[in-house]
Length: 115
Length: 115
Image 1 (cartoon, chains in turn blue, brown):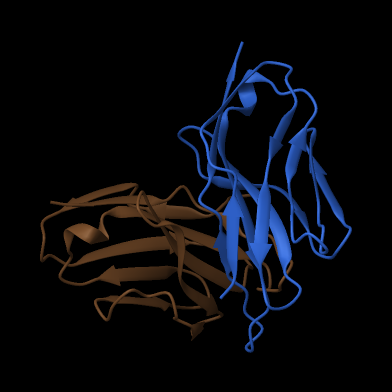
Image 2 (cartoon, chains in turn red, cyan):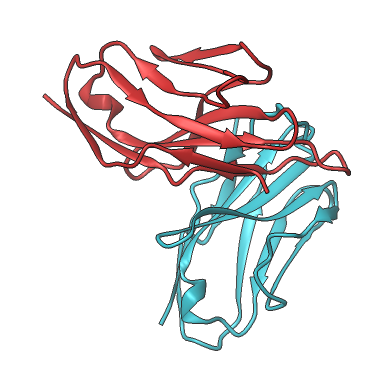
């Protein structure tokens, strides 16, 4: 079945460092790809998404490019801030027969940014 | 506008009791999803609704779990004869149409603890 593999955490960086969180996927078709973020004490919220190969999603300085050839969707940010400390989830969705979609999540990566 | 809301936010119950968890999706969203977030299993899909029907129940872990949606809006997840392994955060999400690239908007979750 479909699956998502994320870089294991926790990840600890200093403020203004460059961030990469790796994400690779396995899917039978052409999924849409997402990064969700869970800030401390808050619910899951969409960070960015890409719906087809070579698309780049971006938001709040974060970027990720849908790479079909490497089945990857790595999350990057050029200069992280303390406020970026959170748990990040990579996810995919793929169409089902009934037109339904469900999200398949990676295990999550906890990111801590120190001042 | 209002986001997805869930109640209760926390529920503590004794093993063997039944519990009901409620989800109010974003108004007008036709698709509704239930997920479970636990330490051992990460984020898992449970069930999907399109309107009032549930074309995908593949994630329900046992026949003790059931869900319904009425009026194309509110949904209730019921767990009968709760077990300790049911302890988790139960998340509800909704999306406008249930399409492959649709963003799913998550509620804050209900934390269930089975003693």
